[in-house]
Length: 80
Image: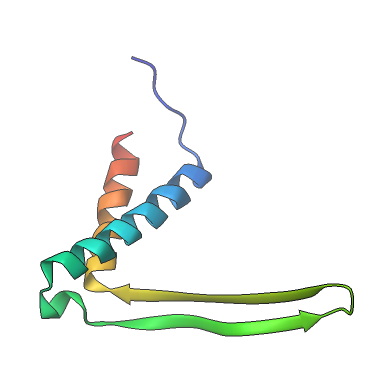
């Protein structure tokens, strides 16, 4: 069986998917301690260059369910 070469892009993709599924699972299970968390990031910032307007922003809502999703995604990555 051929071994798949690990890449950073694959890790980032799995972490993103793991965090989404972890958050969804936390919402479905609806256990209060899974919802405890913080939101980190920065709000939308707009750069107006007359012909082009660019708006950037990033926020990450971290809670226990999301962290569990991160851990499961990382374990899946190490098993590949």
